[in-house]
Length: 254
Ligand SMILES: C[S@@+](CC[C@H](N)C(=O)[O-])C[C@H]1O[C@@H](n2cnc3c(N)ncnc32)[C@H](O)[C@@H]1O
Image 1 (cartoon, rainbow, N blue to C red):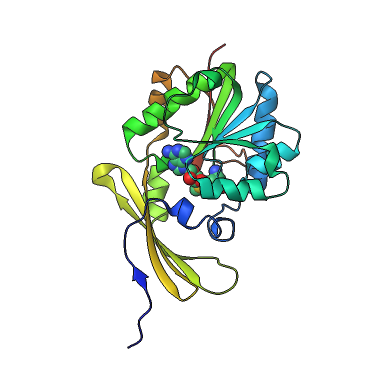
Image 2 (image 1 turned 90 degrees about the horizontal axis):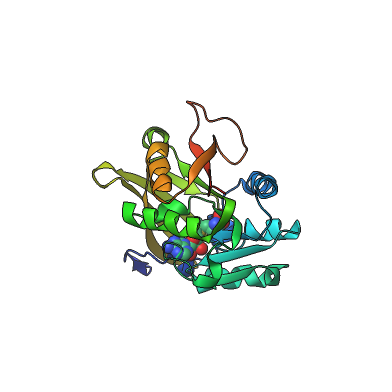
């Protein structure tokens, strides 16, 4: 029987491991609506720069910057950030390497008009405490009247329609299978990726924490933020029983 290298180690640094493949394999398909939503939101609040928590390869930050907005990023992965900076217009987006659940540096306190997280990135903080700290940190980064926007699964939709094994669309050779499993006892879900690439099989696990919109509102309230809008996604359509995701927008009161 022939064998290929099969690395079963559970990885938390998927972003760094697959930075060069992220755009092909993992990037969400709703980029246009995400950018449109955020560009409109940026006009509602005070003037000032935008900050993306988990700016990744710049899927959202770069098109926003190309509209003339000042966009900065905060990301833990030097590899993802290098991809962002290698793209056309990449030098316009200043990215700080660091943990977005940590408190801001003094220079970043009260600096941003809009802080946002897209592509399910906020749920990558897989404990309630990390999510609470992230919201507190985001609130501290905002100017008075500034907004925070983030997307997330609706947990009921995740449980009934979001689990199981699915192939991920991959251009070219190789394949990626994603198995999403719910862990209700710890309010988490995991995505296990089996990746066959260049004759090598790898397994990557990413852990997430899901939450109800009501829990998010309470964590935001603890951070001094108040809900101003909730939609059924970046398209801006109303939240409905059939929605799979929500986008929640909070304000740091002026
Ligand atoms: C799923 S990718 C999404 C990238 C981008 N927001 C998008 O929608 O295409 C998540 C990004 O968040 C970063 N990330 C995850 N947890 C983080 C943390 N605690 N602090 C900083 N960056 C983090 C990862 O390095 C990765 O680049």
